[in-house]
Image 1 (cartoon, helix red, strand yellow):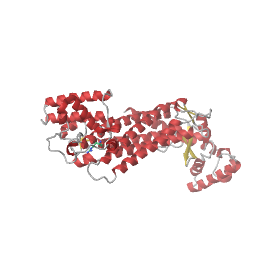
Image 2 (image 1 turned 135 degrees about the horizontal axis):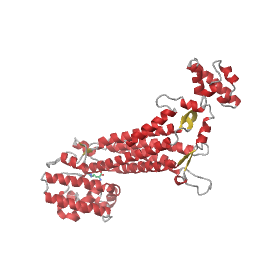
Image 3 (image 1 turned 135 degrees about the vertical axis):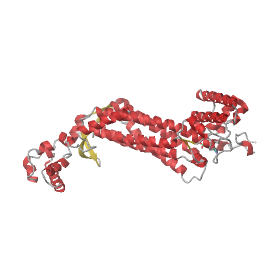
Image 4 (image 1 turned 60 degrees about the horizontal axis):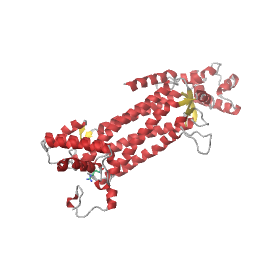
Length: 459
Ligand code: ARG
């Protein structure tokens, strides 16, 4: 007979390579605390239901405490023969409590056990990630609040378009992160369902009180269908998907930080502590942190593809394929967490070159729309005004000038609606200040947006 926990019906030992291949302990040992928490709740419930005695439960609980301490003190040797964290904990409990440990697995399967462990783990991590997002939002809002009147070019197609406030640009990321956090909060509701007690797939014959276990473990809901409970990983897919979207947002900011810190833009300097040098070119100062956040987005998107593909077409209920869920999940948690943390630390150390930003607004006809608006104010229909402003731009290009540099005669030559007040109308600060439509970049709007965000972050 094989010595495995499941060895009863086996007459041959597992092939050594299969043992290694089958094992998930290298990855799922990370779930040890969740696993033990779930086992303790299971024991309490079984004692209450008189499936085991109170004394037995007490002994096993004390044993589990010791197992936990041993794992934390590296006193337990993990090995492939024991496959996964569930079997390691049970085996270690056997060393603490002898044969009594064999009662722990009553009315339970590793299928509902692993589903529970991941949910306990992920609920904690999701709360943590939401806190990290809040921290990063605070850093964004602080930076915006410290630069409320700094103008910069706003871009479309990466071509200078219209001037915006730097703070407005940053607050766009605040909004993205706000939705990311809301997505995690929403995903949390669905991962907050308790699968334990659904056993292998069909439920169990023991008089379990799942409701009691749910309360001990602090879950909001019970998984209602045993087959769904053990075989669904949509909460993992949803989490990684939400993380992927959040990483995409961070990658967009990364790209901008990289561009802005280049000599071509020269809008910001990232502090030395968050950049690296080159081993050959002495002058180099590279934005590695931003590049890595951008690069790590690929990992998380890859993790999403990985979990989606793993789950695709799996017949119900549990399949061993699902053991592959943990690597992409853990990697996603770690990657997103460190990216949020590193950006939260880096942002306050960004030096903003307000002069360069302002100067960049002076080139590229960023006030052309406003020249058209000027004519509209004087009664010209917008399409016609657009055409006139276009001719003004062509004239300026030919003269190698900006719109503001054209003489009043030149401008009057385009339309007799033009008078001297045009220069004031199309000057940079006016162009920004006039954008008072809700959500626009006007000075007061942006100040109000920053103040609103500050309040949101406190509450
Ligand atoms: N290590 C397994 C996993 O992560 C635990 C569940 C194993 N269940 C089973 N019937 N072999 O999926």
